[in-house]
Length: 161
Image 1 (spheres, rainbow, N blue to C red):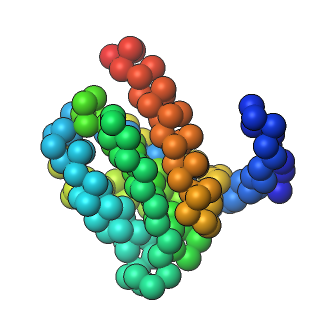
Image 2 (spheres, rainbow, N blue to C red; image 1 turned 90 degrees about the horizontal axis):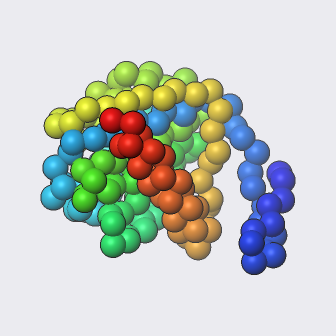
């Protein structure tokens, strides 16, 4: 574990990077009304988690952050996690899924595409990941921070298009 001191001087423990599989999928051109539906986003996250870990509702921890520019939803189960950030006005979304075991990236994308059949995707697959926090307060902060990073990353990609 390492310590991070934020701008207000608070110390926070960060987990070490884990080894396994992390898949990041960026989607553009999805319908805004679908991306604005938080319950649909949550159902999509649970569906992907079921795909990764099998159905086990009782062992799921989840959280959601709603903002004026969209929502972020996350859920974890048995060492795997799925995070979905949606930006309806941009018609963009970013999915991050991770697992401590090997994950077939293209099959994961196929599962994601069942929920979002319209639009183009960009893929990034890695062998290390950072797990989500295990408590609701910290998870909300993590989702907010990750959402800000994703928004900046997607804005930079939009400038290149």
